[in-house]
Amino acid sequence: MNWVAHIARISALALLLALVLKPELFKPMLEPLTENGAPAIYNQGSLLDLTLDHLALVAASSLIATILALLAGVLVTRDAGAEFLPLSRSIANIGQTFPPVAVLALAVPAVGFGVKPTMIALVLYGLLPIFENTVAGLKQLPQTTLEAADGMGMTAWRRLASVELPLALPVILAGVRVSVVINLGTATIGSTVAAKGLGEVIIAGLNSSNTAFVLQGGVIVALLAILVYDGLGFVERAAAGRTRGSA
Amino acid sequence: MIEIDGVSRYFGASPAVENLSLFVERGSIVTLVGTSGSGKSTLLRMINRLIEPTSGSIRIDGRDTKTVPGEKLRRGIGYVIQGYGLFPHWTVARNIATVPNLLGWDATRIERRVRELLLLFGLDAAFDAGKFPHELSGGQQQRVGVARALAAEPSVLLMDEPFGALDPIIRAKAREDLLALQRRLGVTIVLVTHDMEEAIKLGDRIAIMDRGRLLQYATPAEVLARPAPGFVERLVGDSDRPFRLLSLTKVGEVAEPGEADGPSMAEDASLRDALSELIARGVDRLPVVAAGGAPRRRIALSAILARARLTP
Image (cartoon, rainbow over all chains, first blue to last red; front, side):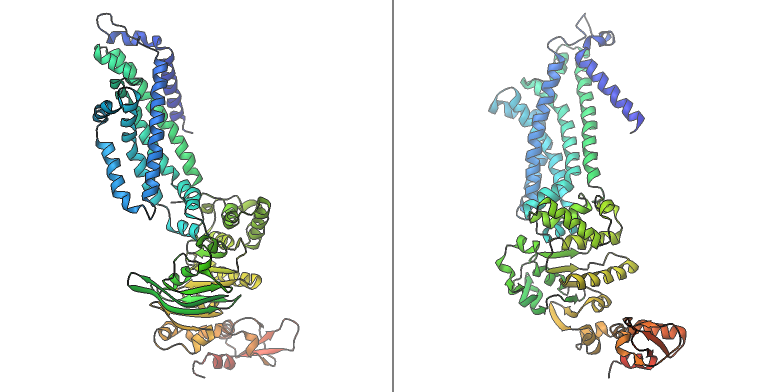
């Protein structure tokens, strides 16, 4: 274990916990950023609650995106589903290129304000990295391994579950990691349509020209992203360790 | 016993295998030889139905392979491929247990069988069983590949260039091991190779294929002595042919009564070995030792040369 990385990791976690649990500690640092005696520390709700709401939103949308992308990725890498590859790829690409703000604007009239439109935007936005990595992970498997699986008498399901997915897992997890981190940041826009999350802090700051609020919200989201990215990296390496020598 | 009866396989309009019939006796080794694109691998894969024949039928031990679902059929047939295709995320033990697991054997039976196979293949049951394939040498991987194929005690073993990824020294040893194993287990083997040397060394009979057709199906001695005109003749007709012929005969079959000086040859050495020994020592004859203290005999250069003549 690398010393520097370890220290950085612990510092980031400590900073995050302090910001969320004891925000008043940072009052002296943030006060110079405020004007006309505005509050330096976010005072319109609990930062802890907002952080947990934010994480729950991202976790739920990433889970749905992972399931959808995984299903689609598996389907298009089967012989029977190969012709759907270009179509699925287009859908995933559109999901990525279509701005989440525009998705929100379109979704609100259909499903109303709150968590729902935000979930739709985040799921669409998170699909592409997972889908592409699932397809890449499944397509790069050594031909001899697959032929051996068939030759031993595995059924298609068995081959998928016990050989293909475990071997593709590190690559798929890399896609999930990218997707989750993108959505941790993107989820802040959910607050524009009244979904609970750290976006509230940033938007409150923007509305009242309070840079201290914006900074608080932004730093918390950034630290979450860094720590989650790092944590999922562990999972990914652990999975890769089990399949060493496969490539 | 494998009966291949009028089997064809078309990919689009072009035949990979065309109306081919072949009978493989129980407990024998048949080698399928040909250049790439000759259809030999396609033929092999039709036996376990990884490729479905377009027409014709294949029977294993009297039963038409079409009457069993493909997966079930393949669980009963050993299969070894070039590069082995070991599952990289599974230990050696779990790799070997693949087919028993698919067949739903209970854990103790699987463990016993894996142990038995590790021992049979010269692997250390305690030390190697928990290793992952990438931690093994090429030769060990090859042996694990064969052990995996034999785990559920199939009566038929299909091998597609099983020694192709080995370096020459290990390859020679691996062939010897396979022969010894086959004699011991009595399993029927069909082995695909592009190497005529390997086909001669391993095959009880050799099937030579070109462009999807069977050109000659005979014992190694017959193929060497009377190759079918055309492709087969060219395939075996190089300058090594007399030596290959000699490698098929054992010293004991040609030895004559009498004495000779020098180090003695074993009865089961090949005439090729004897010739090389005679040349190296610059002598005309060497003594031959028999296993059970039989009367003294000797092997003579002239007798060997007579055997190497292609037109008797």
